Each structure stands twice: as structure tokens, then as C-alpha cells.
Image (cartoon, rainbow over all chains, first blue to last red; front, top):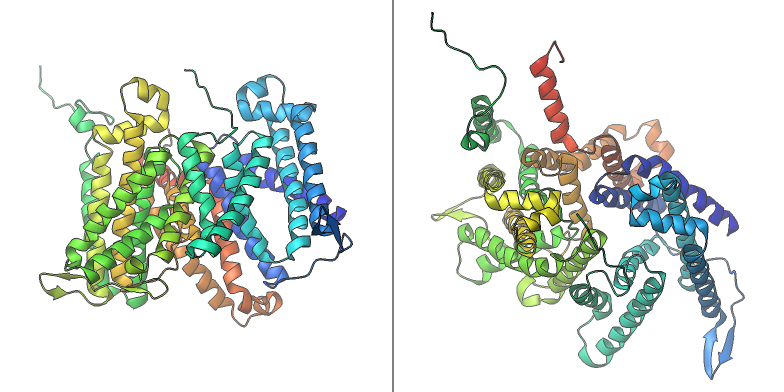
Amino acid sequence: MPIALVFMFGFGVAVQVVVLRPLIGEPIISVIMVTIALSMIFQAATKWIFGVNLQPFPQVFAASAITLLGIQIQTVYLMSLAVSIAMISGMAWFFSASKYGLAMRATAFNQQVAQSLGISVKNVFAVAWAISATVSTVAGVVVAIVNGVSAGLAAYGIKVFPAVILGGLDSIGGAVLGGIIIGLLENISHFVDAEYLHWGNLYEIAPFYVLIIILMIKPYGLFGTEDIERI
Amino acid sequence: MTTQTLIPAGDFRTSYAADTTIFPTLTSRNVAIIGVGLVALAPFFLGQYWLSILIQIGISAIAALGLNVLVGFTGQISIGHAAFFGLGAFTSAYLSNKLPIPVFFAIPLSGVVTALVGLIFGLPAARLKGLYLAIATLAAQYILLDFFARAEWFTGGSVPAIAEPFSIFGYVVRGDHSYFYVVLIYMVVSFVLVTNLARTRDGRALVAIRDHYLSAEIMGINLTKYRTLSFGIAAFFAGVAGALYAHYNQVVSNEGFGVDRSIIFLAMVIIGGLGSVMGTLMGATFMVLLPESTEWLSAMLRGSTIDQLLALQNNIAFLREVAIGFIIIIFLMFEPDGLAHRWRQIKTYWKLYPFSH
């Protein structure tokens, strides 16, 4: 697993340097398009190299159940929770206190101003890609421990967007809350669907309805900073 | 003093009317007319396979044109275009099959219906920007797809909906040869419409919003109105294209209107050139030919050593995706302004040849 993390860190940097650095200053639609194309390549390549079948993940945590407050809980879930909390608090510290995190936020706010203050925008983007690749590797591993590995893991990518957008793009707390809301919403709507409505597949679509409604009321998500523009 | 006729040097215009004509020079108009005429002759020379490719290009170009109004003119983002394409297909199939509406009217009508739905989704989107907008349109995509799967009275559920063949004045159009002309007419009309749109106040308002929406608002352009409108226009063309697609295949199944098709439309617009009408056609041509050419390539390599080494035979679908993704990235890195820009450069080069300045 450390090898995977180191590899993904380097891979994130490499992708940024090779593919995204030439795109600095291009319209956002091009950047979105490039990342989508990247995801096409990686998905197809993953299927090509590893096949499409579910593969069991080697056990990292001992699989046993403990009883907590009268509920049987698999340790796997507890460990996943611990990993998530550790990651989140690490990120929160990084963005609010460390020098590099602040530089990153400054760049997100205004690239030109950040650059004139001596921040290397190139490096910031490289590190941002490296972090996001590493963190999502951790998330991938956590999911894999719980659910097993397959190329279908990429479907989580689609679920991530509503969570982040719901919470607001530049807010870590928002991302956490958004993730919790989307997760709860899926399970609650699945329950309601199965018990009362019998519409089928409601849990897949409910988050998107909620997302649209919330964006209608708050265009920057729940906790995103509103863009106040001057001329 | 001898009178002499002065030949104007350089390219200049003296009136607004001259500045906003569709074709800047007489030659370009003639070339366009001759070009359409030549394409109209294509069924006499080309086989079934090439005709079907041309029809696909035409249909995709109409849909991509709508997306270009939204993305290229107004500067909005949409990754839900394929859902509107699908909605147009299902609407046309429904109108022509379940209601006594001839296909001839069903196609534009389904465009109108799709435009109305597009306006509904455009309303929340008008307030959003950047990534928020992208994800909101993604949500629209999933909601519409879910609707297709759910509304069995409308789409037939898991059973594909049947679309009647195209007919006009009782003459039923059968086969690619005749349908080619239907698509061609729709394509020419759509392209003329959008080119004209760019010349009107509304079209210029859209471009103004793209370039600087705050200034546009100060100039008295109603942002919400025009952003929603551009969603409506985009959905209209997607609907028409979807309807053409439905009557071409004569069955509409639930498959094939997913995000991946949205991405392909988006790729057409970006590769062709954002905000360029002719570029859209180039982009559509490119993106339709790209998967086909990977097919040819794999057919060419079949049985060779490279084939055996990489086990291409079984993995051709993956290989194609990799190739498409790769080419999109290469394009965006080295040709971010699209094919239309490159075309203009080639034109200027030859215009000034051999003196490049």
C-alpha cells in the first residue's frame, strides 16, 4: 500500500506536468474535457490490464466484528472511518495552517495575484494533483477493503461530484458534510423506496434531484464562498 | 486629369450591413453553395457504409451545433447534452407512433418539446458558474436518463420504442439514399439558422455574456433570460438531431444517451473550435471518423505480430477508448482553438503565399 501511495503521488505530478500544465490559462471547459479524456483512458487501460472481474483485496485490517453499543460492527468499517477522519483532519490542517495549503487557496482565489505574490502556480497545481491522486488512492483502498476491487470502482468518481458541489467547492467541512448527506440520502431513499414507494432505483437518482434543488437556492453549494466580483 | 478606377486595396467594409453578411466574400458564398451541391451528389457515388457515416456526421453536427451555441457562444458548460438528444428521439418516436402526427412535423415538434425541457433545466443553470454548472447539467443528464427508464408509457421502458420511417406527402423515405437528403436539408437549415443567430442582437448578447458577463449585464443584457435561452436553443437542436437519429434507426432504445455521448458531443465542439459554426461540422466529422478509423486500423493489424503481442483482438473496445481519450488530450494540448482555427491559418498562409507578411 505505501508503494501504491508513492506511485500515485508521482503519477499525479506526472499527469499534471505532462497534460495539464500546457492548459494553464485555457478555458475551464478544456480542462474538464481533458480530465474526462484522462478518465476514459485510465478506465479502459485498467480494464485492459486487470480485467473486468471483481478481485478480492488482501486483508489489511483483521476482519472481525466487535460489539459497540449493542450493534455488531465489522472492524473494517471502523478502520475505514478512522482512516477517513485522519485524512479529513490532516487536510483541514493542511489548508488552514500550513504554508503550502494557504498558497493553494490563494491560487484558487486568484491565480494572477497569487503569482505576483511569489507563489509558483505551476508547483501549486502539481502538488494539488499529487494530493488529490494520493488521497483518492487511499479512498479507493478503503472502498476496496469494504467492497472488493473492480474496474467498476470508477463509478465512485461520479458520486464524488454531487458530494463536493453540494458542500461547496472550497470548503473541506462542506465536502465532508456533502459526502455524509449524499451517503445518507442514498440509503434513506433506498429504504423509503423499498418499503413504501416501490419505484425502483430511487437511491441512484435522489442525490441529483437534491443537488439541483440546493443549487437553485444556494448557487455555491452549502458552504462554498460566494464569488464577489468587481469590474 | 485622367479618371482612373481605384481598386480598393485590402479587405474593408463601409457599412454595418456589409460587416454582418453571412459570407464575407462572393467566393466564400459560391464555395459554400457548390460544397452543399457536391455533398448532395454523394449518394450517387458512395456505398452504403460511407452514406451511413455521412448521415451520422450530419446528425451529430446538428446536435453539436446546438451545444456550440451553449458552450461556444454563451460560454456555459453542459455535460448533459446527450440526454436532450435522447429526449428528442423518444419524443419524435412517441409523437409519430402514438399520436396521429406525421413524421414530417414530429421532428421539429420534438425539437420544440426538448427546447421547453431544456428551458426548465436552464433556469437553475442560469445562476451557476464553472464546475457548479457542469455538475448541475450532469444531474440533469441523470434525471432525464432515469425518466427514460421509468416512463414506460413514453419510451417503452426496456422494450425499444418504434419510430416510423420519415414520410412526406405520402411518400415514404426508405433507405439511406433518401434519408441522406433529409439529414442534409436539416443540417443546412440548422447551420444557416445558427449563422444568422450570430448576426442578430440575441446572438451578440450571448457572445457578450461569454466574454464578460458583468459588462454585458451593465449594458442592459438580461443574463438570466439569455442564459436560459441558450439552454433552450441548445436543447432544440439536440432534440431535432435526436429525432433525426430516431427516424434513421427506426428504433429508439434506452441505451446510448449516457454521459459518454455527451462527452463526444462536447469533444466535437471543442475539437472543431468553440464558437465556430463551420468548426462544428469539422469536429463532428472528426469525432465520427475517429472510432471508425480505429476500427480500420485494427482490421489492418489483424493477424500481424503486434496484434498477437498485445492481444488486441479481445481488447479492441478498450483500445478504442484509449485512442479516443488520447487524441482528445493531444488535440486540447496542441490545438486548443480547434480545427476551425487551424483552417483559418492554412487559408491565410495560402492567401499570402509566397510572401508571408
